[in-house]
Amino acid sequence: MRLWKLTVIGLLWSVVSVQAADRQTILKSCHEVLRMSATGCKCIADRVESEFNDAQRAFFMGIITKDRTAMAAAQKNLAPDDMTFISGKMEQMPQECAGG
Image (cartoon, rainbow, N blue to C red; front, top):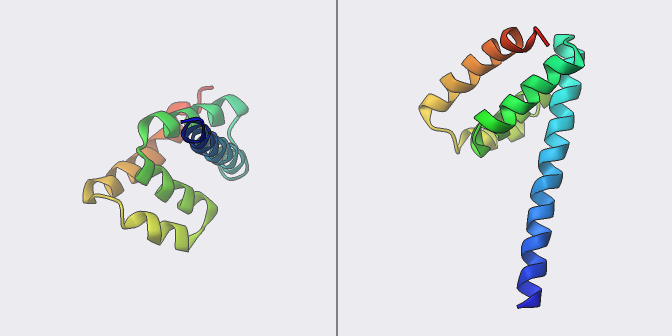
């Protein structure tokens, strides 16, 4: 039982660590590419975390890191509507978060 609890805690910690790394990557990319304020970039990172599902987020991360292998792997898990969703969000979020 104790081993199971430790395994679950380890898995949860790795998910949190990956999400934190993704967040830092989003913030850095936003600042460098979009030249947005820290508040605007935080808005985008918050929205990616809350509005994207795991497959959408993985594809988005591949896009902003220019990792074609990650994009191709993530694309296998996307529904056709996901591409429309992601591209729409990528167009809308900078405008909607720019006021920050």
